Image (cartoon, rainbow, N blue to C red; front, top):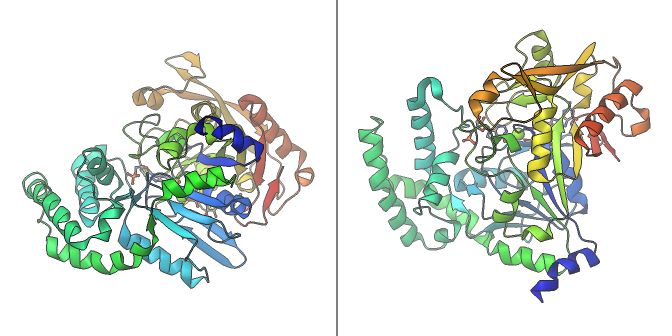
Length: 437
Ligand code: GDP
Ligand code: IMO
Ligand code: MG
C-alpha cells in the first residue's frame, strides 16, 4: 500500500506546501502562512524555536508568534509543533495564553510532538554565557537557548516533550544534566551554578498546562496524508541561516530548508507538492555575519524606516540592503522552490532608484555562485542593475493590474532572473494588502 501512497496524494489533489524564508529570516512568513492557512487542514512548524518572531496583522489585531504555528487565526486548521522544533515550555505557555485571550479555542486544534526537544532554563543561560565568551566573534543569537538545546539533542542528552508526562523522571534527567552543566558554568565561564530544585519548581506550572497537547504528531500527519488533507509546513528563520547551507558559523542551529521540513515533521519527501520561497523586495539580516548587499548609508536607513525593520523577537534594528539575486537563486535551488512570494514591495514606493544585485565580483572575477566559504561571502563585491523607482504608493493594492508599470517591470525582472513566478505579492502587513496571482 505504501508504494502507491504518493500517487494517492496527487489523485486527491492535496497540497503539501513548505513555506520557506529565502533570505536571512523575517521575510514575512507569518503573514503568508496566516493567509494560506485558510485553505489548509494542518499547519506545522518543523524547526527552530522561540528565536522566530512571525507577525500576523488582521482587523485591529497584531500578534507576534514565536512557537505556535501561524495558522491559528484564519479558518480552523489544526496547528502542530513538529518533532524538529525545540520548545521552551515557559515561553510556550505565555504564548498559549495570549492566543486564547484573542478568543481562539486551542482544544482539538493544537498539538505538540512528543519527540520535540525541550529548551530548559540552562540552555538559555548557556546561550548567553557562550555568546559573551565569544567576544567580537559573537554570532548575535536571539538568546533563546536554541544552539545549546540542539547541542543537547544531538549529543543524546536532550529531554523531550514526552518526558514531561513523568515528573519524577523529568526531575532526575534535569538534575543529571545539570551536574555537567554546572561544572562548565563554574569552571569554564566563571558563572554561578544553577539549582535543580528551583528549576523544577519553575517548570511545574508550565508542564501542567502543556501536557494535554502532547501527542504523536507524526502519526497524526501520516493519517492526514492518507486522508488527502492539505498541509502547510511553516519554516522559521531563512535558507541563509541554515546550519548546513547558510553563512556558517553565522547561522542558526537547525535546518530551515526543505529537507528540514521532512525530518522535522515526519512527512516523507515525495509527499511535498509545493515549495514556496518568501523574499522581501529588498533584503535584511539581524545578528552578525556577511551580508553582501548591506547598505550602511541613507538608503539603508530609509529601508529600515519605511519597512519598520526592527526584530519581532529581540527588537534589534535589522541590517538592510538591496535584493540579492545571487543569494535568492541559491535559496531557490537549495529548496527546489517552485513558487515565490514577494513581500514589502510598498517599502520601495518612494525610492528614486532601486538596485538589485545580479552577480558578485570575487577578487575581480565575476561570479553568480553563492560562495560556501563565509570569508568569501564577506569579500564579494555586489554588482547591481538599477531600476527607476515608481514613486507612487502601492500600499493596499490587491490587484496586480493596479500596480505601477515600473513595479511590474521590477517584479518581472526578478522572475526572469530566477525562473520562478510569484504567486503572491504583498503590499502591506495586513491580510487585505495582498495580491494573489
Ligand atoms: P517572519 O519572521 O518571516 O514571519 O517576518 P516578521 O514578522 O519577523 O517580519 C516581517 C514584518 O514585515 C512584520 O512586521 C510584518 O507585519 C511586516 N510585513 C509583512 N508583509 C509586509 C508588506 O508587504 N509590507 C509591509 N510594509 N510590511 C509587511
Ligand atoms: P524568523 O522565523 C531573523 C538569527 C539571529 C542570529 C542567528 C542565530 O522570525 O524569520 P539563534 O538564536 O537562532 O541561535 O541565532 O540567527 N535569527 C533570526 N534572524 N529571523 C529569525 O526568525 C531568526 N532566528 C534566528 O539573529 O543571527
Ligand atoms: Mg521574524
